[in-house]
Length: 85
Image (tube, rainbow, N blue to C red; front, side, top):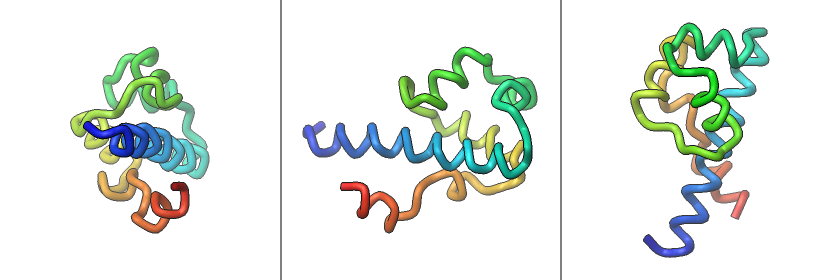
């Protein structure tokens, strides 16, 4: 993987976490409650929400189901990722 792709991946994990934090705030739901409802260990979810660990697709699918959105809604738009470079 090139250095550019590695940096983009890091940014995407942070941007996805931000999208999830926004949705949690709108629903007045805590990350602890999200962890409980998704079955993701709270510590593992915390590492994903801080960008320390990347989300995997299964995690995103469970999170989307609980939040009532699509997996695509959890990902930043192309416009967002282009402006952050």
